[in-house]
Image 1 (cartoon, rainbow, N blue to C red):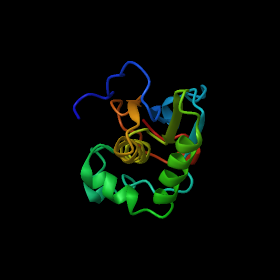
Image 2 (cartoon, helix red, strand yellow):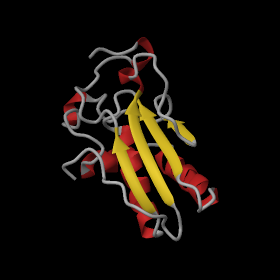
Image 3 (cartoon, helix red, strand yellow):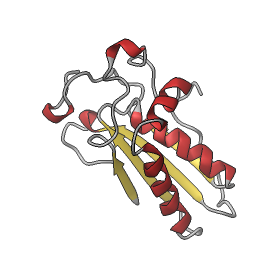
Length: 150
């Protein structure tokens, strides 16, 4: 996928329409998170694959197979995806469901989770739009708890 956003589709899906948004808290500059029906903040419980600088993943993002594999192998990631999918499955089909995944920089964990969840939902015939708000921005390096360094 070369674009940061999958194009929206018109009309409602028979199963349901879902929008998945990814973002980085450190790029919000204290502003609000994107509006969503459910937001998953994974900063504290999912290890950042880019934190280990010698893995070669720092300049990659969650759309890359290796980043998705590392994130999915992280304790808590499969359960986070399952929780997001359960939320969507319980959502009324006649309404568009919006879920958001946020991590520190919006490049690795949130993007990987969104891409995996989107693929799973598409196999269930949901119509899914994915918007990566910060994946194209410069990476954020530093301690998440102190605001990071850009």
